[in-house]
Length: 219
Image (cartoon, rainbow, N blue to C red; front, top):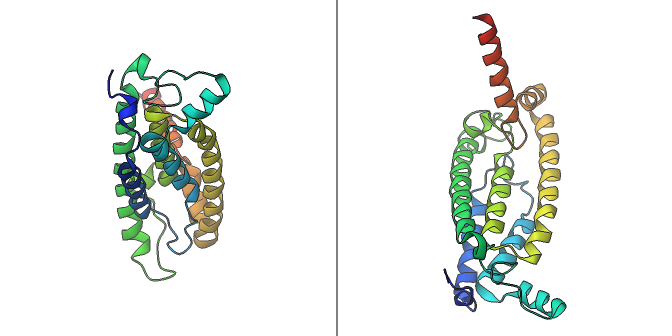
């Protein structure tokens, strides 16, 4: 068997390391308001739930076995997701998601720090360059990407329940932040929001497609 599931459990140092790793990741997540950043307890609860089941105790397996009267196969809500069918493909997807997410966080943090945080109070400017020239809320896109990667690697009952709740929480938080941005930057933010997608670069792609069609039509 590839990476036997039972070799994972009881590794409490790994539980702690996983939580610390993503706790540090949260410190570098770019937000406009340093003092107004909402606690990201929901995301860390997701991380803790996954760490406990990946390296500590397979709680989902115990719950399912109590209800069904038998163990589910390795890979069905315990162990590497669907590893009996796809091997470690889910883990490879997760690593890809983590690397892309980390790259976006680094790019976003640098842009926010240079153009907004490093300015005096009231003098920070609206950030529209770098990753922010494609989407308005790259930090929440990263949260979605990373938690999706976690599910691809090791889906459990708690994380499957928490994932859509986390999505709703961050969508509402993004909307509240946009209200703050409109109060601070006025029409400049309205124009920016009209041009950029919220979590995906859909408007950028659609605008590029329209320009390409116009160019083709003009030739």
